[in-house]
Length: 231
Length: 233
Image 1: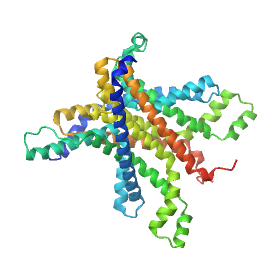
Image 2: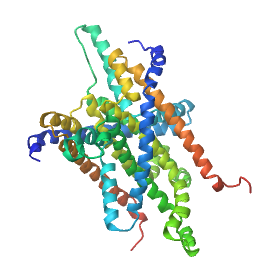
Image 3: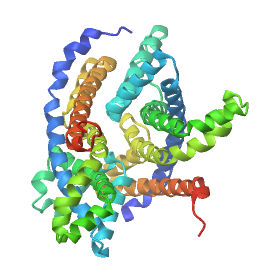
Image 4: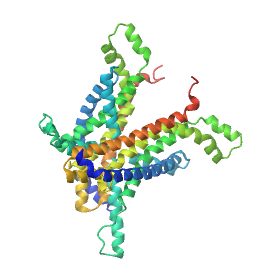
């Protein structure tokens, strides 16, 4: 354990980085998921096909390939553009943070598309018709009738998607983001104690995923509290 | 920036050279992972705390940490420990391929044992009780009554896990293996045409995912054929 002593602050900042990239990816995944779900549910044929292609591609391709494609692909384009203005420039990239967040957001968004779509269809049709009969507008029906029931249906899957996002953040170290796996590699190079360092990384991840699991469990209990029987 | 469609086509055969390693990784990891998963499942549902708790700890750790970190612990980390280097497993753990198989097997076994547990718990209690009334012993009930039903119930979730595992094999490229992703990364570092090459790699993975999905769909139809309604009646 003595070997760890000089590395606590690096691991701390790495953890902060993981949490930041997690938050960014989560927001993006929810946005992509909502867009995908509304496209799949729309009557527009083109939107349906596009959304279908989106989910098939991003659920069937490894996360790492998407990330590498995104990071190096944008880097090549940006470098070419930059060289038009200044031929001296060798390499321009999207910051690994955003390349990673967008790649993970796109992948998990594809899974969320299905979750949101299922939750949307899980609300009984009679409720929507009742809202219509009461004279609620489409927007009102969505926010006051569908949403309060949808999130309860989506929650268990949503919790799993949050865990996937958290575990996928480890991949961004491959394109150079200074999060905890990256810190683990740096620390290994100096101390030659890879087992200790990567175990520390694993335990930090385990702690974060445990918190997410407990949070989801707690939210699920809250969401279903009205369904619980009186004891 | 000019996008070269021909480069996608011409790089496909080169990248497909990595297909062998990807498929080999999958075959070994699926087989070993399934055996481990059944062992962990039996421990988990044994009802004895000294078996249940280790199984739960195993599942908790492997499902709560990223697979990349697990590969790094096994590939970079284990050689730090002397007893690992002196153990019988060292010839396996010395090679990146062996490390990846071990990591993928352990990781998928944790997920699969939970999937199988869902299947076992989904078997109707009455069926088990009926078997008991007929005088079948506990092992007989598990093998002849519970397992066939549980397998059918667990299959859809298992096919998803199988495809997740296929995607996880891409991480083998981080420990120098030349699987599909590994070959693609090598070509990119030479040609610096990331769009074309990685899209070609993605196409191969997509084709594989499609084949497995169709295959599992067929298997589900086959195993569930007597549950279909109105076919003959």
